[in-house]
Length: 155
Image (cartoon, rainbow, N blue to C red; front, side, top):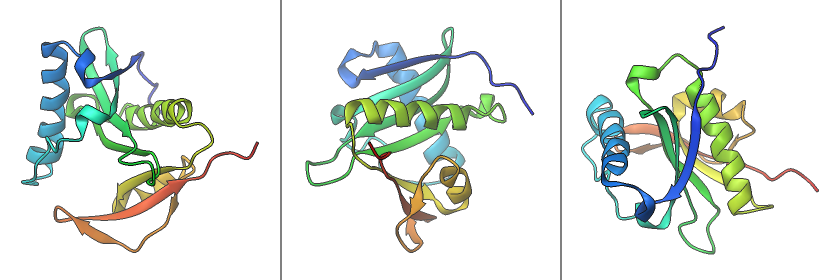
């Protein structure tokens, strides 16, 4: 099994980013979601201002990122825009990123379930992290997805 690389975790709001760090994160998301997955959609969707942004990096090299947010008080907290740099795949960073994202969501929204919109082919991966499928399969930007929820641990 490939050893997990050393990484540093950073969680911050959008306005706390330097221009260079913000550019790197948004470029990686566009490279993954728009270019690699060939999805013409508004990656810059207006929601980033309301999110916490989680990054994993090694020195100055961005490895992976995700955003954590609650769209409104009557909606569950969400983990989204989960991306691992194409240059760093195969190193178990997706697992590390999601585990860090869960911890940060639990800090920000204690005792609450966490929701994701998962690409359908990743159900087993998200299931291994405690997420359960809660919807039928649907298309989002031409890619099959399912909704999944991770329930809070009992007190």
